[in-house]
Length: 165
Image 1 (cartoon, rainbow, N blue to C red):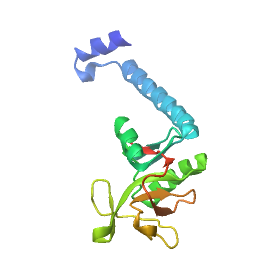
Image 2 (cartoon, helix red, strand yellow):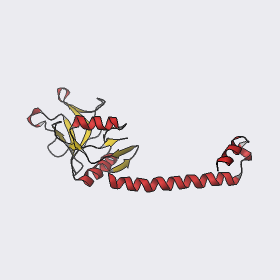
Image 3 (cartoon, helix red, strand yellow):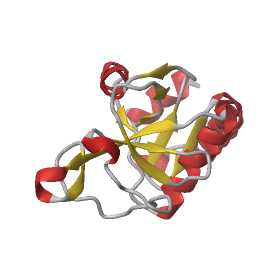
Image 4 (cartoon, rainbow, N blue to C red):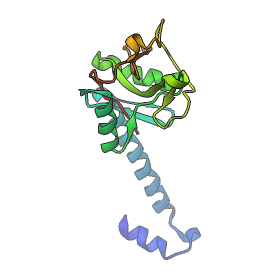
């Protein structure tokens, strides 16, 4: 195959052999099938895709700040669902581990709003009934329950780390 690629690269495209193009298409189909199979395995391990986002967890429980750090060290960021479809994909992972998870939303109580980690206003929410409530004036972070609904929470408790890539 490599020799054919090199030979073809030095010729006009129109002169490339149909067998070569066919072989490339077959190789592409094989790669797509392999990727599909690997995605199924990753779902069992706590991985999900929704729209342009991929969510992944290793099942570890940490504080909010440590969750942010772990995701950044992995080359991603804390999971931030900004559509119902993404929220559902994240909920599926949370349900797999039966643990609440941190999401990349924080309170700006001085402005009476919630923002993403980049300080942009939140466009999508899925608050649990009665939330957010800033109980005891210490709830700055946001967790997702296994129901997929959100709760404002103290940042120093441990929740599931789910990163977004």
